[in-house]
Length: 400
Image 1 (tube, rainbow, N blue to C red):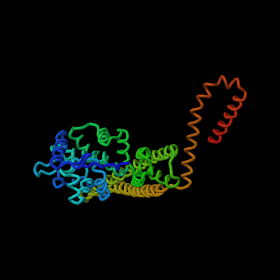
Image 2: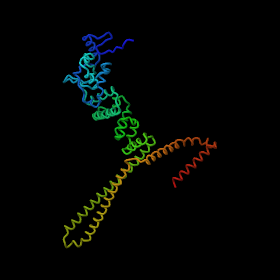
Image 3: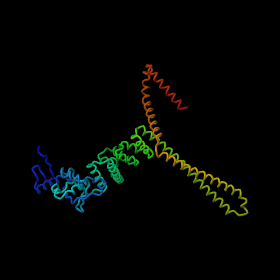
Image 4: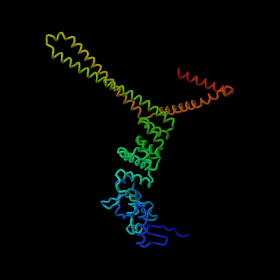
């Protein structure tokens, strides 16, 4: 079997073209493509915005290009002031080509590196959007890198939305990264995850679907999810629903506590104002009343002094109450920092009970629609009566 030939720029099946002929052929090819050009490596410059993408395995890539040729063109933006071209996509390929010795470079790229030349009059925002999109198309990105791309695109499109250029951010992100809009929204929602769950998503420890569900929970509930994952490796739908309910109950409790704190603070403020008003009244009476009339006002001054003393006692009571409430709040928060084995079992039992009730509710309509059949079948009727007795016994226990 004949050895497989590898064709490189400037080469045909019968051998190497003469330099002039190869150059002319390549220029004709370039001219036939509206935005395609062969550019010497000296006229290409790296792009600072590409620093967010890894530049590893350059030597291996350089060897691959030498053996297999350049599989993808670079994408560049021209700078008319300097007659240079700034890389949009292809930073690793550019550095790999620069690793080659001059002889190899000239053999492979006699007229320069093949590049797609983008429009030079685009804004910095559009350039970065183009850069992210181009790198995404050509690279195998990790979950962490993809999340960074979506996070950065969201920031860029928020600026474009403010200027009225776009209306739907998630739609634009989906279009640039060739994913569904629904998937784009899930990635955006994942930014609400606490660090522990965010790390698990980056490491493929949880799915994007799960991350989207968990992101809707508050910090307390997400911490419980982390503890469940650590304890048993997974969280089923029933457990997730139970944690959501616990979280909602805690939120209501927190609101009530906050409202009570606000009321206490308001009452303290009112007591302070009352005490100040009484002090001003005492001072006014003492300073502005002639000495021969002060005895007549003795009773009124005593009354005001007693009112002030009472207000001060009430203020002290409220301050003590406020400190107690703050201490209780800290204790509640301390108790909620970790989940006990008993609470884990409780969550699991609640989940199973809810599942059983839902199943019964679903099947009850079936029983009801077949009451005629049950009436004529003694066995079915007996089983239903036994079930009725069990439910009655359970209700009695619950009400006792």
